[in-house]
Length: 361
Ligand SMILES: [Zn+2]
Ligand SMILES: [Zn+2]
Image: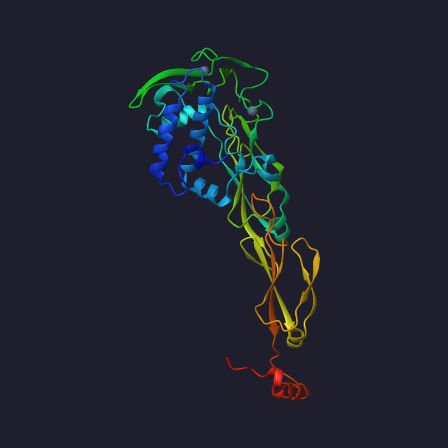
């Protein structure tokens, strides 16, 4: 799913155009204008979600760099950037719509509390970057309190129903805005949306509802990542406690060790230095591959410095696409700085020999 397509704008659209497109689409599909129309509701959620991504410059850039998400590929299991449309309910969409047009939910209660994102920087080796793989990530983050399951309430004393919202957890109201009247549903600010309040605070988390915990998370890395990319794992960040929802875990690709290779987009370049006689006579050479294997290649007779021999499909995996780039073996010719007397004589002889004369252009 592509947020540009959802809003019907192009990739070069300005922030203003994006906002305009969102406003038009959100108005058209707003649940209050399409009562009972489930498809309109789905469209409404999608446009709100697409706008959330494209209105945030850093998220828009990340989306652009990460490429299209048409083909989820093997990395979608944990919910990377591919899943930008998941985990987003109608309440979120309604709230976002009100906020985006400058009508905050005012005194009707706090909005859903989102936990903070956790960013983990990782350094990849060539094989992981080229072919993808699985990484175990150690992360310390706030998780829902194990004693009170996030309620913040002492287990033995229990909870009582919230009087503010009659145990519903939500308060709904009609708001009149420049765009017309809309129903907003907001959380009860007394119970934070739970519908219950603790009689006594949990002693483990002192009522906060979360505690620190180290965990190991397994992350699928798609092939073809570059430095500066990040993979967003929705809902795997810090838990804010109480009724909030966890932030995201962001895996930031800090560096990639390409070893002896150089990367040119999806291709890898391997510099192969051969001797001058080898360049003239040709020969067979063994070169390393990104997966740790090796490959025998043939260098033709009369090969010049700078020649590239293409080994198809031995380069980097293509991010979010099928196939791999190529491995380009680039020839350099070793020229000795110092030679022995006997070698010098051989070279002088060659210099005089007709095949070695530089022909005029
Ligand atoms: Zn607790
Ligand atoms: Zn309440």
